[in-house]
Length: 575
Image 1 (cartoon, helix red, strand yellow):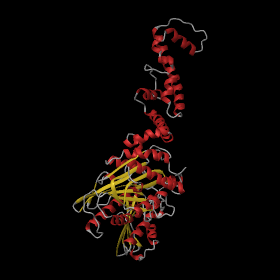
Image 2 (spheres, one colour; image 1 turned 120 degrees about the vertical axis):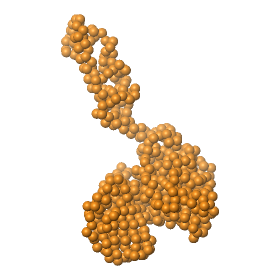
Image 3 (cartoon, one colour; image 1 turned 90 degrees about the horizontal axis):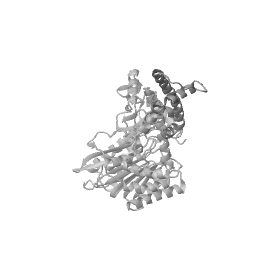
Image 4 (cartoon, rainbow, N blue to C red; image 1 turned 180 degrees about the vertical axis):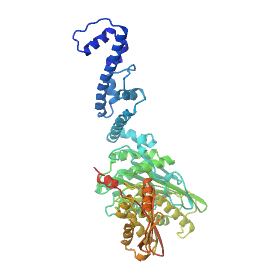
């Protein structure tokens, strides 16, 4: 290989000696040869040495690729080729040249190996970013500034806010006036460089509200937040971590939650009783306090009121989510533009009961605390309580709402006023948009299911029927299989305990009516199946409409289909 690199300076004697050695002569003669024979010798040696060089380089490539991306250093030092080297193929040699001296034109057959090498290198870097404390500190600073691509490399969910007298705006939790936010990578996750710590802060004390899981095995931050909200009508900050749920962690988990609040309070110069905490991740794992405590001051220093900072926070709270969830809207109330924004996370273990997944909602309306908490709870019931992915209510379900009052409107204190109704409708719409994004991103899902029920005795009954259908594993599996199985829908509606007459049942999927008057119709099964297949192929919304009578009650629920991937994801969640 070294000879090939220096062939232009090699003497005729050396060339002849090498040729003789190759054919096995022990005492090579050194005669003069004609020019055309000399050129032929050079050509043969050029190809032969290049092939030998290629074989050696390929061995080094395979070896060093397993050495976490050190290929370019190993090959450069061991092989020692120079700029004058011209290998006769575009295999490992040319790949190495591109790594050392810049891009070169490569044949397609080499691209697969190159991608594999780069992926191995990226994987090694990601692992070291988690395990190396020094590396983590650097990543924290970079992530806060958004300079590390993989930290926030996750797409956003579609915005699914229902139509109404409002308009969608950018900025999510930072859209309402008086709020800042940020997200960052601090090393809380088990692996990977994705952001894992978020902070949302109000400039001044904001009226607070919260709705929590009803699971008896609730996490330490749930218990803590209940205490904070019971002690005060206002709060200033919400810290959210991903990686550990801090559930089933005993007294140490409670201590860690309070220590986290103290750290935020110190970094912001506020009271610990003004800080709320949310956690998500693996149950039974203690918080990585060293990483959290190192990250909080950096996070506090990098807070921003811009849309990018808000989106960083939205990414930082995700776990198995494939997309981040965030939205904001603006509505006119009392002659003032009032804004509501929010971020949420959730993909699995989604079946709230008077609660939700993790979410932070901000609003700049001036509103009386008692009224704010009441309307916020009703909005959660009509949104997050009406979604289901797998029928499991999490230990950590929490939605927190902060209202800064910075919109400049007159304080809303009359629950029966038009302004109160307008604010509640706007908050409900935003929460429904976030809730639908969660169902859309259900683990392994290929579509969002939207189930509506009409004709019930009241709204509560209609909601129960819709939620039962959306949560039926048989209905969800049928949708995934593009099977318009009306029997499963009717069955799920019937076991809710909601009374209605069978002859009043009507079922429609998309534009196809499957049942009328409690009797199945001779519908076009091919068309109904095609509707499901087409909708699932583009991750759209499958609409299921059910009527159970002539009553005034109407309700909606959202879910997703049940695919093979859901089992794969959850069968190996901790392993």
